Image 1 (cartoon, rainbow, N blue to C red):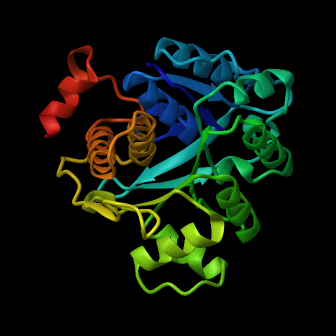
Image 2 (cartoon, rainbow, N blue to C red):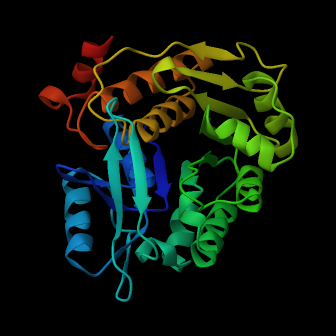
Image 3 (spheres, helix red, strand yellow):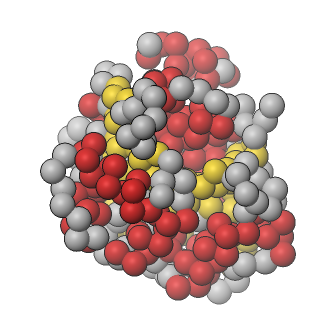
Length: 303
């Protein structure tokens, strides 16, 4: 049965050296969610400009639900200048302020908040007070049992301990990478000895169900409460020829959430999340089209 899953936050254009690609973690997440068979819903805001119109057209073309994307007359659609190093790893320069800095709490957003199975949000879209307040309203409006996933995204100086801590308090699952974990522990004045103990500390302090730590091409680690069976779960990742890493982490999150919602074991969640993330890293852009029109075919080539 299809689950309703919201990507909440920024929609933007990634301005790469040789091309321009639609992106933003919530939109990337919602796209992969749709490819995996659930209903990916984008809750964001774009400008009433050419880039905003093209973003809406492109998302609709990709099969995303765009009925809840707001438009802004005053601020432009978001853009990010992306530079890739020799290994395809991205560095970002994020425009500010833009339309998604003015996310508005509306009756429409309250309605979808009350009727979704999962929502994924990040730290970047909370850089403005207005959007931060709206995201918190949205999370608190969800019904009991809605899965809330905080995908940490430490970009430039657009984060603080207060934002990170409150986001973790509102979340069930926290996903971050191995470079972000020690920074978060330091901001919270927690000791950081190793990934497992640090993740378990976050679970204890913020009452989380699961902490996911990604390690780039070296796979990932899923950590839950010490008493849980099959935990922690480690996966070595999949070796692929990297085109670029833009959106691969968002794809990982989408794979993880899809499997979680459909009752998979930790090991299966880890396997699928790594597989989907590796596929996106092997393709150009954050929203690649599966070969032969089916995601299973593309993933089978990586296995």
